[in-house]
Amino acid sequence: MDAPMPPPPLRVPPHLPDEVVEDILVRVPADDPARLLRSALTCKRWARLMANRGFRRRYRERYRGAPPVLGVLANLTLTGGVARFIPNPTCGFRPARDDLRGYRAHDARHGRVLLNRLPGTPAPHRDQESALAVWDPTTDQLRQLPLLKRPHQVLNWNAAVLCGADAGAACDHLDCHAGPFRVVFVGIDSERIFASVYSSEFGAWSDATSADHPGDDLDIASPGALAGNAIHFVFLRGTRVLKYDLGTRKMYHLRLPRMLAYGSRIVLMAMEDGKLGFAELWLQYTVLRLWSLELSPNGLDGAWVLGRSIELNKHLPADAFLPGSMPCVVAFADGAGIIFLKMIDGLYGLDLKSARATKISMASGFYDIVPFVSFYIPVLRAALVTSGEESSVGSSSP
Image (cartoon, rainbow, N blue to C red; front, side, top):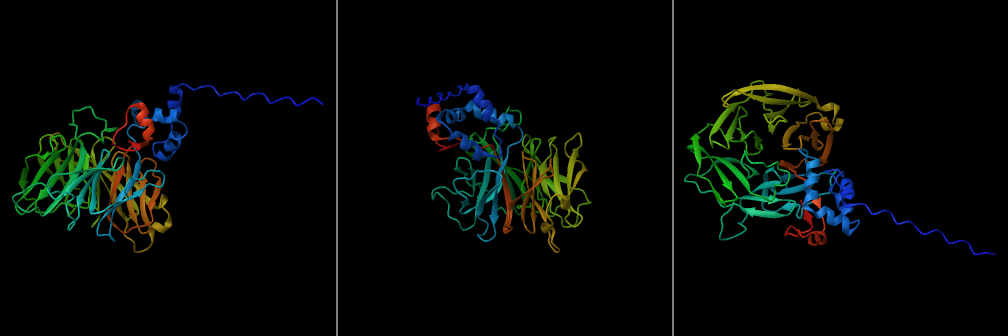
C-alpha cells in the first residue's frame, strides 16, 4: 500500500509592509490602551513600530480632540483627603502608584496633574519648601514647585495647571505633557486678591498682580476652567466667577445667572466652541443643565445662555435616584466632554455628546475628584532601544 501523500507545505503569509501594519494599529480605540499593549507583545516588529514617534503622533492625530479619560483622582475622606487613582473601567491604564501619599489632587489638564501637599506632611526635600507639585501619571515624573512667598498669610486660594505654550503658539496639546507647563495661582489674603504664574521653563513664580479684596472666598473644591486665553474660578457664594486673563494678567469678575437653583453646585467647563460654560443640576437633581457665556465685545461681561437640558433618569439607573439623596456635579473632563456626577450609588461619567453614562466607582467616600485625560500608548523598553528612542520614562511612552 502506497504511503499517504505528505500534506502540502504551509504557505507563509505575505509580509505586510510597515505602512499597512501601522494602518491596522492606528485603528485601535484610544480608550483601550490594554489592547495596544497586547499588540506590542505580538512581535518585536510591531513593538518597534509602536515605539516610533511618527506612529504615536499619527495615532493621536487620528483621535484629535478626543483623548480618553484614563481615570479619576479621588481625594478620599477616609484618608484625610489623600488622592487615589481610580481607573476608568473601559481602559486598562494604571499609573505606577495608585495612592499619592501626602498629596491631594487639585487640577489636571494637558496630561498633567496639579497636587498640593496635605497639612502635616513633611516636605520631600528638607532644603526646599514646597506646597504644590505637578505629576505626570503616565511617566510617574513628579516635579516640586518652589513655595510662593507672600508678605501676608494666604487665607484662601485656587490654582490650575496648563501647557506652557503661549496662546499664539502652535500647540495642539496632543503630545505636550513632557514639555513646559504653567501653574496659575490665585490667592486671597486679608487685604487683596492676587495672582501669580509659575513657569517650568524659568523655575520661578512671576511677580504678582493684585486687585481689591472681593469680599468672598474662592471655592477650592471647584476646579478651574480654561476658556479662551483665561483661567476661570468660582467664588464660594456661587454668584460670581473670577476670570484671570493669561495675556494681560488682569482679573475680572463675571456674574452668574440669578435663576440658578438655590444651593446648587456648579462646575465650570470649556464648551466645544471655546466659550466658558458651566453645568448644574435642576428639578430635584434630575436634570443636567448646560449654560454658556456670550461675552460682550469688550470681553469683560456678557449674558449667560441656557443650552441643553439632559434628563438624567433616562440615562442613569433607578438606584442612582433614591429618595433623600442629593446628587451633584463634581467635575468636567476638559478635552473629553464628560461630566462627572456624584450619585447615591457611586460616581458616574456622562458623555455630553452621546448622553451615555458609565459608572466609574461604587464608592462615594471622597471630597472631590480630578479627571485625568490623556493619550497613552504602552510600548516595551526593548522596542524603545531598537528604535533609538529610549528615555527615562520606563516601559510606557505617552
